[in-house]
Image (cartoon, rainbow, N blue to C red; front, side, top):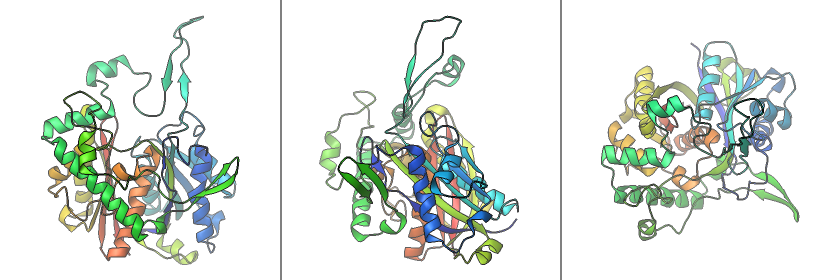
Length: 400
């Protein structure tokens, strides 16, 4: 199997639900980081690009009809370039990254773009068709997040716990207290604030030009972080699942909009197009867990990826763990034997601070990890995340 190199990685800012990016269509948003890669790597013969693989979890609105293909065309890539969209829910763009890497490693491609997008602000309501001829019953579902058009058999076999309910399940099973969750959330916000102030995130973010009635605005900073977060403020928030619960809006990730893209190349393509290899794909893996405990998915996925790479978690210089909920992030770290306040875990903050635009979050983890490795001089990074309906995914990259 050949080496696969990461040559560039960028993302848009992440906007709040209904916030600065809410006016941008999902396919337009998806095109922004692709276009940025083209502008930043002008020596590439883009007619030689083998594929664009994009992740997207919703695909019920303007991200329908293969948003990966739509995005590459809107971005200005040649019409001869193919594109596809994959859906592993929260892990979609990390899965897209792994798929593109495997194609290059197998020799079936030499140059590819992988990434993902999600516009949760613009996720539509959908109306189901009648169950019988001339039926007049109407059923409307919100596609922003969570279950819709539930299969009764699925509900009978596994239940249909909402995402916050799964976090409560994990907290109860693993003994993760409200105080621990709030402390984790506070650290995420504090680390994000410090990283933003130091300019660490600027290198990975490309602006989005948003048309307003009063003109065009360049959105260039993440909108979700709350710099004024305090432990006292987090402690005052009410639980969102049950009165005596531990999961709150403050120790959970947000509902957001964003996109990211990663330029991947074989060793031959790096030389042919005058690219600079900045990282190397090492291994990836996905694994399944009980849907009601979906937050534990990163544990078996990380172990599988580490086993494939012949590495140990102690060898990871950076660990980017998607903070869907503080409860599950803490439980995962404890299972992996990593302190929940370890400085190399989400050192620039995580999804509790930045938000979680489902189909784009995996690309953000990999992009951020790559920049962190180069800033710190570390060698390996593990990126991992939980996935709705009971899965986990992980990828390991190496600094070059």
